[in-house]
Length: 423
RNA sequence: GGGGGAAUGUCCCGAGUGGCAAAGGGGGCGGACUGUAAAUCCGCUGGCGUACGCCUUCGUAGGUUCGAGUCCUACUUCCCCCA
Image (cartoon, rainbow, N blue to C red):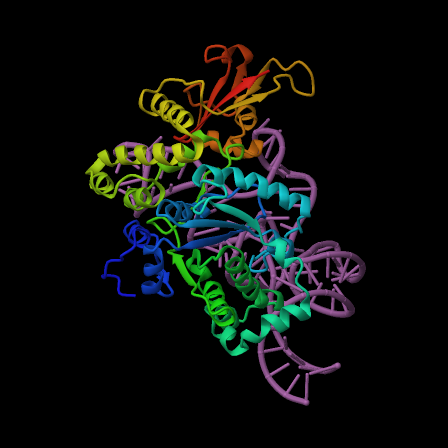
């Protein structure tokens, strides 16, 4: 795994140049297979939510690169494993999803993949499958006899994920212990169905991936490879994808294109180059130039990152709109009607309220979850209504909204602006 | 089966002598400085009230007490040691 020797295949070379590679199981063999255009690669995705978030984007992008380099991407939805419930999750008692919910989630997630990959029946077309198809049908004894014989406890205990738990004296359930086998079975099944020979994943999946690789090599005597990506975090160490408004979802109904654009726009300086390489298709030379921009000029690189990333997910129009809105709002200080808008009922349940307090407006705008929080924000100088800092308890009349597109411009901090429209 | 230990502010870690809305971190949010950056410094971080205040919190259920996170009993879950 000498990092210096260049790869022969376009696929691996690109992956390395753009920073996707953490570890590879059999670099030389995989390189040869890729050079021959014989890579069928898969990644497993959880189906617990209706959308993927940015944390998974690096995986999606890998499949995209694979397809572009002439390989065939397989998307595996964890319909079977989701039914069990991921035990590695800390707050274990996650409610078990029904089959219908899981199917709905899968359908919703698929719309995102269609933006990044071309699906179809051709040799390099992407395919999506649900591992419930085969995992649901496994009988326990059959499972043990067919696959269990290939795994020794000695080896399983040596895996980092297991060792870590044991060393820290944390419980490790039998279910969890079996998880790695199930994933290995996935890989084997995919090898038989599609000739899949590569599993991709995050660095935390290394152990699980290796198991699948070995299982295939042992049982079917076929070549199989694994490749992991580095764990993604920002330069200052924060976990990727967590921001002000919670998880950065990829589905537009959970996270608007404008917000998505803002997420990328607010990238730290030190991450710009890395993110451009990972999350855009811009040529490397161009990226090198962009990340070297001095001082405040690096902002141009961030805008480009935001544009490219948003365009890829939400399309040209949405990206352009987000950029225009941001430009008007932050650089020219002009009100744009494309800002996130929240409608609320002006008259309260108690009757004809003709005016509202500042904190009520903040809460109606969804910028505070309670009146107390709203008041604290106002007192801390973090709120602006119609561009002025209100006092706690200050009253606003409905007519105050008319000046700005019929809405109150409610701003929390520097970046969060919402139009609160009385109806 | 026997013995010992643990569970704390529903984001995480974590202190806690019977008077506690509960120390301290991390994280998050806000402010200052900047470039919609980072670093740094400051403030906030259970809910409701403008406020002296009220309500709800320390695994679950009871009990002792003027008063319980703190003491007692039972239960649940987890860890360790012995068998």
